[in-house]
Length: 98
Image (cartoon, rainbow, N blue to C red):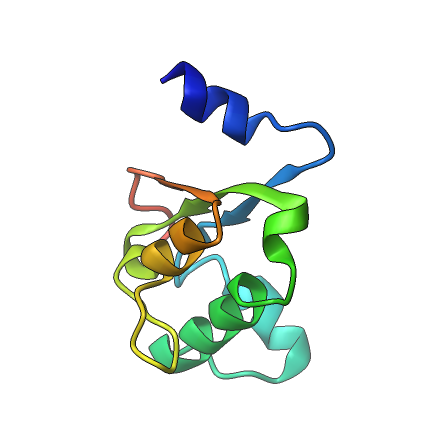
């Protein structure tokens, strides 16, 4: 646990909150004219999580239930993808706004 805490608290890095529920992500999608559907949410999260060099700036990612089950377009679960980059995944356990 100490090793994980040290990894998450690495100097110069932050935690990415990719834990928006389908009901709350609409605030980001509406101004962009994006439909709030599972594929657009997956694509948005993939854009964030597969950004080149993410591991240089992000030490941990908070996932929401839907995000934890989603994969890259190549079929790699987002959780496994970030773990392979040395980023610590975590999951939010509440159900959010729906």
